[in-house]
Length: 147
Image (cartoon, rainbow, N blue to C red; front, top):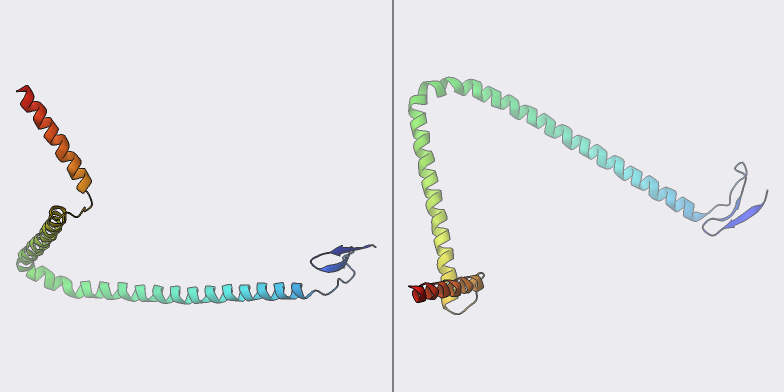
């Protein structure tokens, strides 16, 4: 039974049945490990509670949806000759307003870009536009010289 020196834990005996010297680093590591383990357990319990609550809530929403459909189906069947054309009209109106708004935003963006370009600022894409203008001009001159 020979002793050996370990830099981390001090002197240790080679046989397992004999006691090792106490090292405070081992105690800190054990406390850290148990603290991490407890933190993981708490996180798992919270996740299980939240998941269970959401599962119960989704079941209640499903039950409410089935009940609402059961109650509303006769009303929808009776009033469908009026509702279908009304829904088509509302859909077309909303689509028209959204399309008009989108075109308006696009036009405002184009006008703002053109203003910056004409006023001497260099907006994004101005170099590409200048290149295309020069290429188009040179092609037009080539066609004019040929013709």
